[in-house]
Image 1 (cartoon, each protein chain N blue to C red):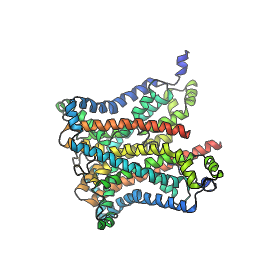
Image 2: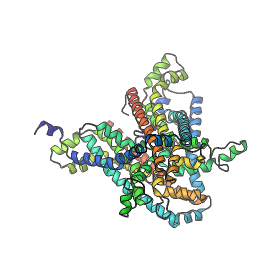
Image 3: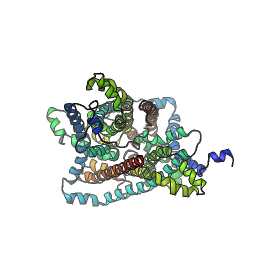
Image 4: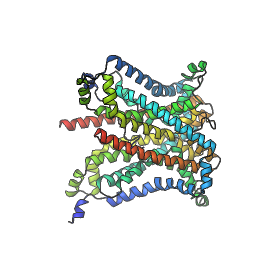
Length: 298
Length: 278
């Protein structure tokens, strides 16, 4: 899925130019029909699930909500989720910067193929992503016997969860940086180097300020996926309570045990994270658009 | 200074490319190749038997059919929603625009339990359908609903920018030649949107085929009826049938590669047609 999650930015520009032009203006009844249908669909399919999460979470009252979240298993799931994100996001951040630097600031054959390979994890089913690590590190996997001899556990343990998370969040930062840095070209960096700046200085003083919003954008999308990943992590986790359960897996266990209030309480934290992600994303888009407008004026 | 040095004036090429290739190989390429190496080691007959077992084939049909249907629904409603967001002014528009991306940000398991709660027989929507004997949760219809949820932003976000950039001149020309709004839409606007609609369809479909988290809660997971292909892989793994899981995974991976090529082709076509960078 080329650019699937990374590259889709919001575009709510002004519609007045269409509404004030007689050739592009729809009849009023068409407008209300289109908006009525579209917004009903939006409310039913997107808003209703979101409202349901918070409604179900607080249905049994604040006390049940707090008790569900302060349960030791829930807390350990929160810790593991934070740990997986704290490892996978920086790794993929470093990778994203490095890949973007190599691809956009230098010429070499096979560049397009490399870009396609970087996108691969987006088009692989999360379940398959989990499976590949079982095939490598599971008891019957390639390295299984060696790992057992050395008493190292990857599958059904924390390292497997981290690996699966790194895999599914692999392209996020790179996908944001590459198109932007390609569009910006190399002139500014080349000027800096010609004037005697070192490579690191050039990166910190010239490249980074130019891409900071895209970088942040990639990082928050990467983080949202890292904390919310379910399928891939589910395959490698083994679902050991208090040890290898992330928040989404904990939601599943509670739900399957009919502890709906507790399941939705943990789910509400994840939904809140999703809303925060969308808020930051909208803010960055607004910043980027404002910067673009300024550039056009200046 | 030689010519070659001048051309490659920026430092860090060896280090950044070396790290990129090493990390890509370790995290993505080598693990994915394990599926094909493992599948190749099974022997042809065992592979075919595992990949085409009746219960597995039933899951392909369901995953494929439900994903196609969901992507088609998303094309229709995604276009309507994108049209509303681009062409009209209405209160709350910015909020709607921001929340269209919710399925990208909301963890799939959360979407899964919420949808199940809504469509179960005592749920907000399920209870109104129950008297008519319409069941959505725990049937293939529930699967389609979950796939519609996760696929919607793909269509909206591919159609929206194309619609935004569409030059008003074409519609002005059509109007001045006496065409009505409907005629203009069908003959002028819609053809310009076809590449974007197809790309959105393919993206939503590709995501839907591999989707797991939002589906398993609402699906009911009955063999031959409501078992999706990713669940078959999990089922095989739980039975320690690694070979069986690998065979199914290899079929899914090949489908992913084909879809990736199709989507890249569609995006290239789309950007040529629209005259903008994808």
